[in-house]
Length: 443
Ligand SMILES: NC(=O)c1ccc[n+]([C@@H]2O[C@H](COP(=O)([O-])OP(=O)(O)OC[C@H]3O[C@@H](n4cnc5c(N)ncnc54)[C@H](OP(=O)(O)O)[C@@H]3O)[C@@H](O)[C@H]2O)c1
Image 1 (cartoon, helix red, strand yellow):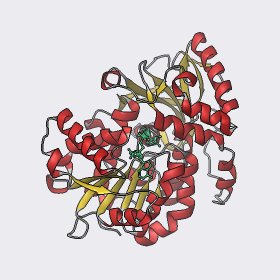
Image 2 (spheres, protein in one colour):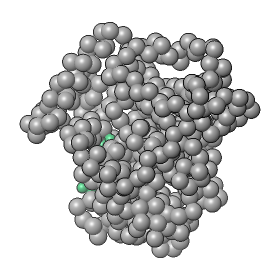
Image 3 (cartoon, protein in one colour):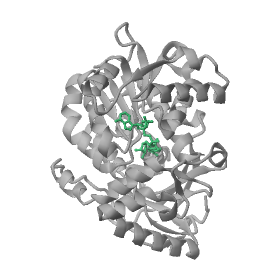
Image 4 (cartoon, protein in one colour):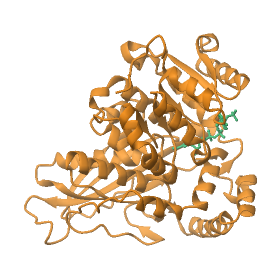
């Protein structure tokens, strides 16, 4: 197994690659806040990117924001460029873990994964791009296993709340003595608070991700996976637009990476630990009729434009216009972020011990919540950094072999959820009922 300890030749626990990016700068601040949580109460870290000047500016800014002047002088800078493999190799040789913040990952992610695997550094990213995540698994899992390297993608808001939220919900279900533990369904619904805003980098990842989403099907066939066993009734897919009684809002299927990531985790847990996979569907609440009309209009325009290179260049040139102001080149201000939060509700159904899953509908229900601060640039740095600290502090609880993992697969046996609870990304609010009590509570 690649080491989780520093040495004279590998001096940094963490190297933040892409530290000068919009998200990277907040990852820098989060690492600076959590140094005492490193092994033995210490964390050695450096920032990396292609521009020394920009990295110096980021450290300057973090020093001011956190009132930690020592950041200006005590944090090392590594210059590395995705286009220069030797510079990536040199960076990876010095790091126990690389926190990869350089996206869109479909363009920049693979050379970083490759360099990490070849040079014995674990790799954590915040990609929300299923095609990138699954192709890394297909292409690098064996090599990462041989090298004892963990490559753990989607450790941001995409998709830690959903992936660990499903595991948390299932574990709470197990705690109920009358409920069978091995047959549970899980539907989940999102609800965002007002005021959320997205930076251009995430918008670009979405534009190019949607542009060739068809390729995902052919990629998946290459895994040659056996169908996952299901217990009890099959989870019904909901419509393309429906009114959710659970959250009292119109809702649509969630198009991000959560379903792909959750499925990969559930497959791993089924194959590795023989647990019955949770069936899962992800939806996002869009609000009332006015918001639905806006969404239909924006969605149609997006689907139309994303198919053509001219359309994609329009979408990436004018993100504010095409997203009705939700995306901006400048990204949200600190004030906007402070006013924002996320909430994710998971609704699960299963069977009590006296109920035969093959005869009849699920007869017990559960609801859990994952909630936290602004999703993209506050919660994401927290989940990313806590994932890295979990590798450093809890390596015996990680999968025995290295490989390319989803967060749920890598961290199911660790205390990552407890760590996140302590840092404001909270898994809580369990409601257990028998089916006769229809859940009307709106999160
Ligand atoms: N999971 C989540 O919920 C979540 C949340 C936030 C962001 N993200 C993802 O994180 C990624 C970054 O987003 P962002 O908004 O931070 O983007 P961004 O501001 O555009 O940052 C991109 C970073 O990549 C660097 N970069 C670009 N080309 C490079 C190269 N050839 N070599 C080295 N570095 C290079 C940039 O360096 P320069 O500064 O030198 O240009 C910059 O540091 C996106 O894929 C986004 O989707 C995910």
